[in-house]
Length: 394
Image 1 (cartoon, rainbow, N blue to C red):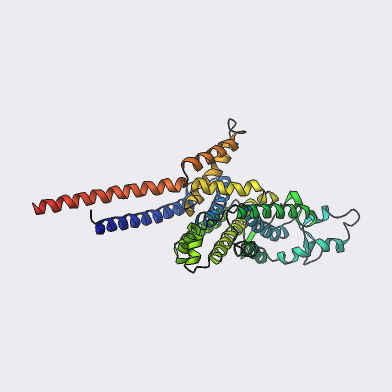
Image 2 (image 1 turned 90 degrees about the vertical axis):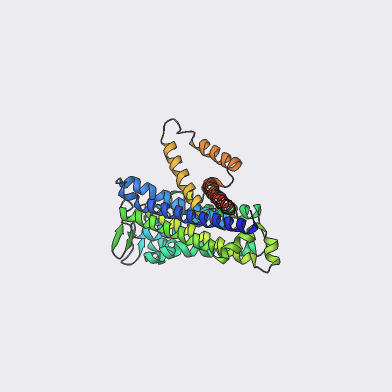
């Protein structure tokens, strides 16, 4: 086989892989959007919507870990910030928010947590409620659910990557930060309701239409958002910036030698990943109607890494599907009497198996299978063409 034929065959394999990749994206989106046509149980639709939110978290992890090479063990920080910003706004829209006056709703827990004898003193309440005032506008809470994670991530990543901190040290810093913020939220009980989180929320309302979490329309909000994020993420990593990012992941020293600002690319993609996590937190509150400090538990952030590893951290859709599958298996196993106490061990065993024998996750297996099929087709075509040429020469 000549060099030209080898190059042509390699190009054909790559084109087939790209076509198969987009076909998988299209099939996944079609299934997600078409699910309400075959599932008429609103309880299950709401449950699946939450799993789709976790799929969005899988995309965020794949973007930072798989493509940027940044192991973020504190992604729950950005998810939690997005959730709390949204919950604060929806809390003030609920019937449980008491009215001090015509334009100053107060979360009910602020009265419960007030000092004895100060329950009727509105000045004391105002000292803790001034942070809530802007969240009376729903658009403000929704905007802050994305803006706050973006700002925090930008400041954090600028501090880390400009100093060329990398590897396990980034993981330790992000892990410590999410733990710190969780403790701050719990300690600020008069303002955040501490361990109890924010419950009894109102519904998301857009142009007068209320999105009941158990409505099909709410499912479509989540499913449509996931589809858009997935496609935009796929487009982003295929751009020149995405290709440069992957080169900085593989060899940052060489990338710097070629004149690329490695820190700038790392900051940008780390911040985008945080924004996606914040948006996921927003959607989760809309579907689940609560926000809790448990969103910032270390275990939850590490679970996101497990989802991405199982699905394939080098694939956005692989990490997304991995997150959905793992959460579905967890919920099913935890509700089964046989596996009720052992489901965490099962998930841990799956993770160990994937790390040892499937380093590229489910997406890697699928990618290898597609490549093997196409190479076989190309080889068969080459052999047929060679045989025909030999017959003509004879």
